[in-house]
Amino acid sequence: MSLSNNLSKILIIDFGSQFTQLITRRIREFGVFSEIISHKKIKTSQVNKENISGIILSGGPLNVYENDKFKFDKKILKLGIPVLGICFGHQILSKELGGRVKQSKHREFGLATINKVRNSKLTKNFFNKNNTNDVWMSHADQVSKMPKNFKVIGSSKNSKLTIIENVKDNFYGVQFHPEVTHTNKGKILLHNFVFLICKIRKNWSSKDQKLELIREIKKQVGSNKVICGLSGGVDSSVVAQLLNKAIGKNLTCIFVNNGLLRKNEETQVVNTFKKKLKINLIYVNAEKEFIKKLTNVSDPEKKRKIIGNLFIKIFERYAKKIKNVKFLAQGTLYPDLIESRSVTGSQTSKIKSHHNVGGLPKRMKLELVEPLKFLFKDEVRKLGLELNLSKDIISRHPFPGPGLAIRIPGIITNEKIKILKEADYYFIKALRDHGLYHKIWQAYAALLPVKTVGVMGDNRTYEHICLLRAITSEDGMTADFYNFPKGFMQSISNEIINNIRGINRVVYDVTSKPPSTIELE
Ligand code: XMP
Image (cartoon, rainbow, N blue to C red; front, side, top):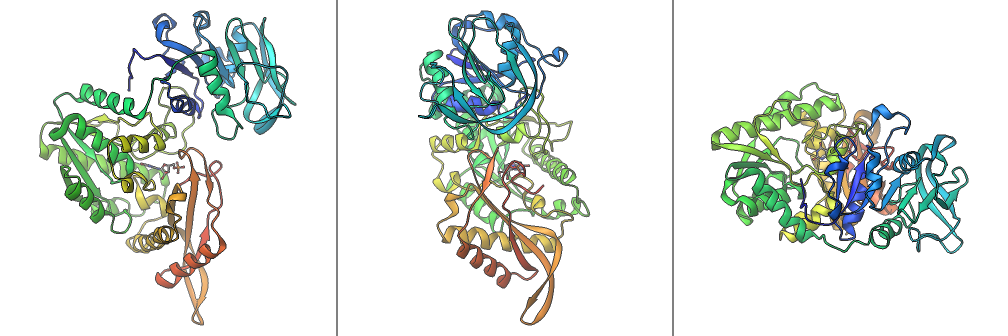
């Protein structure tokens, strides 16, 4: 997505941090346009000074002295644009301006308390009344000597130069991550940088985003035909509506029933999109094809690749039937990308291949249209409202492309799918009945690949374990488990065991992300 070149913006130079997109997002939340560019791609000579009000150097997994592993053109610091360095960005800024960076004696990962040393525009209203604040650190190196004309604004016990500034040249550096929610009042610090230091005006909203994305789609696809993989979830629904607005009848949506959907999902989707929204929709029942390909496959990455490939094959098959289709539109989001590969080409480590990204075949006949690939879930939801989608669609919990396959660790069988569909149905229904559905970001049931002994009606049983997962989150990048009242846990456990043959034990997953991920595979 190359967004409007005329807008004033905050430019973020990405050095491969998992959190780079969060910085952009925070800034867009302030109503200010911001764009990311990889350190590998930025050319100072091509930077248009006029519309860049500030530059942020992101964190990253690098060491500032490993010059061969990254690119940094010092000239960017001579443009007279305010610069904020975060973590690695703080270190590279310090080093390039004549300071020094060394390995920390005490590495800091997680929460650290910092103390105020002096006042600064950057930290206005950031410190608590007792002049301390809790911030989130993740670094092994630290700035050991400041460049000339810099002053210390805040220190932690293990890193004295945690916040530094050179007011005259508008350079600022912070060792911690103000963009993550774990840093108390991190948004205030970023807000100060954007408005008090960069002095940019608000210029960005969901409405602007909608118009810009529609313009981009028109530009990319022209008068060609597009098929859109519709799952009925919020992402693909928003993509379908965007495309509908951009190209109208040149769009055909394809809904593939891969046999790994939630109970009754296919009927609901067809009813909503074909009957209510009158979208041009083809329903494909490919249950048997998917299950056959997944026979005896237990490796999570293999499952994801098989499913991703088969989806594409089916889309291509139908594209041929429709004729002259050149593009495939998908609801890929930024977290899908960042956890499969880096969007900007900087180095982040691969966690899993989200099916609409890493699962794509190397040679694909259709070109991709992925208008949401720079957005987070909550931004997509706002966009959905802007596109007049119903609240019911917009507030649905996310459901992964590979569906129940990644909620059945180990080998998948028809019997397991049948049991899991029922368990998931009871769990989600109970959440709705207890008014909990909308308090939870995502919830599901999974079937573990072990059987345990139970006793029912005086008889021994030897059946599956059902795992329940319910999390709260802002964007799926980090998550906490939801703390259910004991009564709810008791009643759902009873309901599942009493109603579903094949499960005799229910467990609740109480891990957060990180260290776990939301899905099991
Ligand atoms: P993880 O398990 O990576 O999940 O913490 C983060 C969010 O992404 C969803 N997810 C997927 N969505 N295709 C998708 O469209 C996928 O392959 C995929 N894998 C995970 C997951 O449900 C959660 O909301």
